[in-house]
Image (cartoon, rainbow, N blue to C red):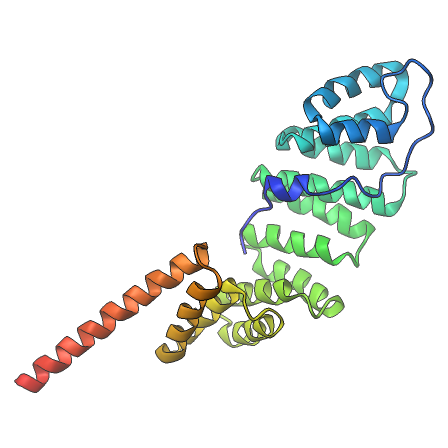
Length: 265
């Protein structure tokens, strides 16, 4: 639940919800916003410097937005996050979805910079604008869990599941939160649903195995740990499953040794 969004997730965001501004004057660095954003996507370092010059030529908010996105795309999280929030606040006449998009990107940049309180606050601004956006709610839940605010994370995940009941990741994340809170019956119900929707999920199989082991159902726990190794080889979940299988094997070997000793006495 505490995992953070990485740079790949950020750069994979295409420049959506950003309508073209009116064409610029001849002789400016960029003809319009779209041209600058395209440049930022291709060569963010150059685009950032060019957008600063464009701002001096009078491009204003469009140039500042382009600078913010160039910072984001080159991975300068601590600079990109406040710049994106400033652009979202500055563009009050733009569409609600566009401004929410910018706040969401700012939140993801804060998350990548390991600034989770700032990320939660930025996600809150995005959710306030588009309260039914399930991805924003999911992302905020991850940030909240990273801050150990599990009940708040669950509240977001409840809303996600209500609107998107087939989103297996939401069921898994809620199962993990319930498990941390020692609500293992709820956790098991959630993880079972996650596996019904995504039977090959290594993380879900690992959680179910651990829940079964906690109830001393070692036979089925072992089956799930072995399944994790099959469906997610080389993954962190598979590594944990292997550790648990080895621990179980040592425990069972020790039990057999002790049992044999008692029989010989």
